[in-house]
Length: 297
Image 1 (cartoon, rainbow, N blue to C red):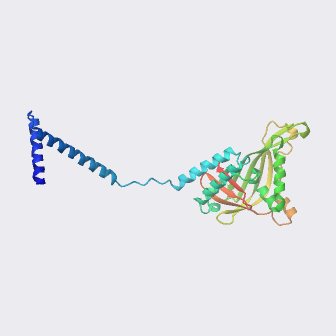
Image 2 (image 1 turned 90 degrees about the horizontal axis):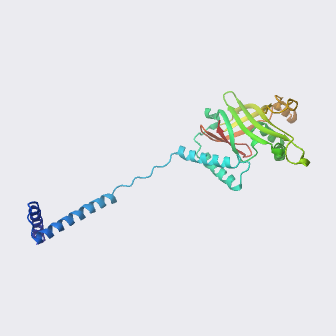
């Protein structure tokens, strides 16, 4: 029978091993049976190893956390901002990329009520906008509110005036203090004066800060109501001749002027809505949808 033959084979293999260890050459049939046994044993071992590999449970890849996803999106957004001059020179493709990243971050906002969170307080530097950078100042929010549909013309004219002959907007910082009810905008502006018919090089250039301060209060979880009170000009360029520095330290009572123009008891109340806030970045919008991305200083 098969069992009898298998037992005989195993006996022959055993005899072969004994004979080999004793230095005696085993008969040919025993040697062949010994080799066959080793081949079968090796095949069984390989099959068991293969089976254990096949049936080993798969380990799911670790998913990135929400903080990691936001960090990656913020990094890409900052790269677009840097490559596009804070959005001022953004190409259509860069604008699309920035808009997509902003929407991604807003959807993953870790702070459900940014306007009432203490995290919103502090100094924030403007790193990207889809509108004129100087519109980060509440002075221009108030002017836009009063001018209505004609505000865009005013913004264009102001941008042209500050941009000719190498002028423009430098660092823009917004300070929020909800406990004290204050919001302050510090916008560095480089102003130049030239004679167009003689070329585009300025005959005079200097830079300084335009600082607008106002009241602020949270209206709800996302909205700050702001009223601009004063605007101060501060001359920062030490190379400017004293005779040309006559505006340094000048403070304009913006709210009083706007009350006279508008006929109200107070200056116009404008709104800043914040839709993303963490310890490093803030994304806010004006009432017309203009976007401002700030990074904590």
